[in-house]
Image (tube, rainbow, N blue to C red; front, side, top):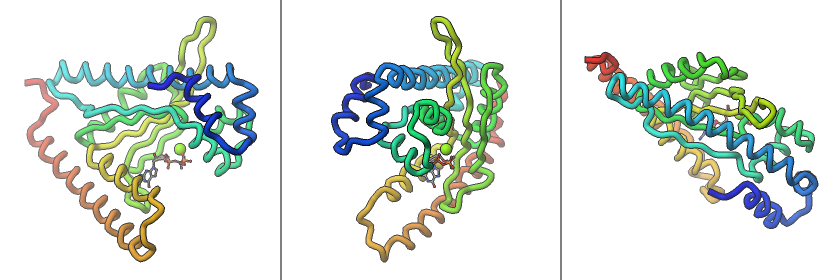
Amino acid sequence: KMRIEERRDNFVRQSLLSDEFLDLIQRNKKPFDLLMCYYECAIMEVETKFKVLNQEHSLEYDRNPIESIKTRVKSYESILKKIRKKDIPITMEAIEENIKDIAGVRVICSFQDDIYALEESFLKQDDIELIERKDYIKNPKPSGYRSLHLIVQVPIFLQNTKKFVNVEVQFRTIAMDFWASLEHKMRYKKDIPESQVKFLQEELYDCAEQSAKLDERMQGIRDVIGWNKNE
Ligand code: GTP
Ligand code: MG
């Protein structure tokens, strides 16, 4: 994993045009690195919480509700894109305040019910504050996208203070994640022939619907097996 200073230097070096965001970073190297460090720490806190829940569940029911956890800190390029898209003032405070998905944790489960069970256990914890919740499983996006999104604030404990940091948590089933990865790749592919775009959109939407039905059926099988009871 690249160190925070290295990531910053790379970005500064590779950015050809001088711009306000670059200036901000260069003028505030230390505080900016510190801010990014907070996000990395908040990710560690949240990831640990899910690993703990997974461990406990595994001991109790002999089954892991979490298939895998992916984490990322938003790249500087993506932060800059979002600043432009949302017209965010270029100050550290505004970035911290307005971009709530700089720290991202993606929790991938086998079954849909595990998502809501994990969400409940996570939000019950008394150091987690829910800021925003979007349930794209109950209300899928027009693209077909499904996932449960939370923005939470998690405290990180520093030498002398406690700092609250925004983290975006996305819960998905394996099937939802598979779909979203493919759709994401297509979204950023620039050389798709115009004649194919509509077809691909419809095809992807249909795949999302079918894959949601598959998730439901797998869930149904699991319900019959009654996997959560400790026999
Ligand atoms: P932004 O955070 O500015 O993107 O807008 P928002 O706050 O409305 O975000 P939302 O909660 O809808 O989605 C945030 C994240 O979810 C994105 O960064 C993606 O990772 C993911 N996402 C949302 N919609 C889609 C979609 O249609 N396809 C895929 N592949 N991912 C999506
Ligand atoms: Mg968002």
